[in-house]
Image 1 (cartoon, rainbow, N blue to C red):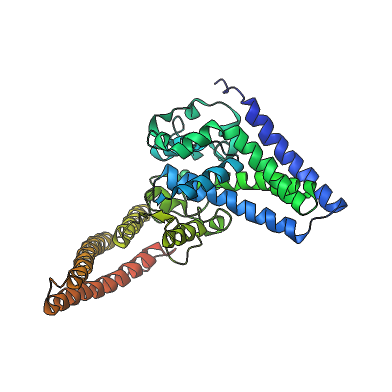
Image 2 (cartoon, rainbow, N blue to C red):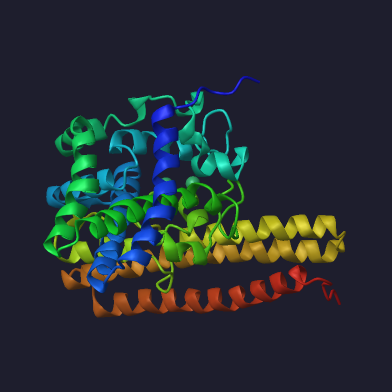
Amino acid sequence: MEKAPINWVNMLLFSITPALAITLVPAYGFLVGYDSYEWLLFFLLMGFCGMSITAGYHRLWSHKTYKAHPVLRLIFAIGGAMALQNDVFHWASDHRRHHQHVDNNERDPYSAGRGFWFSHIGWILRDYPSSKEDFSNIKDLMRDPILVWQHKHYLSLVLATNIGIPALLGALHGDILAGLLLSGLLRLVLSQHVTYFINSLAHMWGNQPYSDEHSARDNSLLALITYGEGYHNYHHTFQWDYRNGVRWWHYDPTKWAIRLFSLIGLTHDLKRCSPAQIEKARLEQQYRSLSLRCEVLNIPEKWRVRLEQEYEQLLHTLQQWSEHRQAWYEARGRQLQETLTHWDLQQLRDRYKQVQYQLKLQRRRWQQLARNLAAPTPALA
Ligand SMILES: [Zn+2]
Ligand SMILES: [Zn+2]
């Protein structure tokens, strides 16, 4: 098959910048050295660019998982240009296509099915038909004047942020070159590859607790360098949720920032998946892989029936728990408006607690069964 034509602008950009970064940055460090102010600026700007992509380009514009104040949108638009990952229109359009046609080698612009290199950066270096410009899926974004402005002035913004800001910050400290090398060049190259890992590694390395219908993986190590985007299996399963690391202890600084901004009115309408929906997805995934395992290992029928029964019961209780929980929360609101007696409320609360306890016991049984069936040699007495 004939190879797609090379995109020379990108090819030169993505070859020259890393080559310069790995030679000039250490050379200058060796000859002159960098001080803590210069390193601090480097890390701050890394965070600024990274979070503009994860919180802005990704969770705000591509997925609309929350709404943001124009000031914050403007900041993200500038940070995204500094990250040099194209304007929001191109980025979000490609990314929406990535979710819609995930793993489809003909239609997903960075399909992981075409290998690590292609999904990491190869897709940018040539003009592949799968990433042909088509803004029909971002009509909503094209109405945002901030994004129209960013699209129009993208090149000037790129130059001002990548050369102007590092040079200015360096000059204020008395060393323009150090500023340009660390906060300009090294920051640019590293922040780009950090994002690209989400398209490559996060579709190859890690586990799939929520769904194996797409190649996306959850990987807490990757989350550490991608501002929380390493929980990619969750993200592809529930793309409308503003969180990627859904548990409170999951390292997801993007989620924390969006939540923090909501406390001061910079973000609002944060969308979340309900705990029951999340648990249901995990359960279904576990059931699918355990049934497959039973089949492959030829596990006796009795155990398959037990698996099926426990699964159905747990799903049912989960559903009930979710309904009672909803009723209890609503009732509390009505009590505040004094349309509900204390007695009614007590009854609802007790029913909710009862189902919750039942769910806890069933969960424990299910986990035991799952552990047993997933053991290298299941103890099937
Ligand atoms: Zn996404
Ligand atoms: Zn993905």
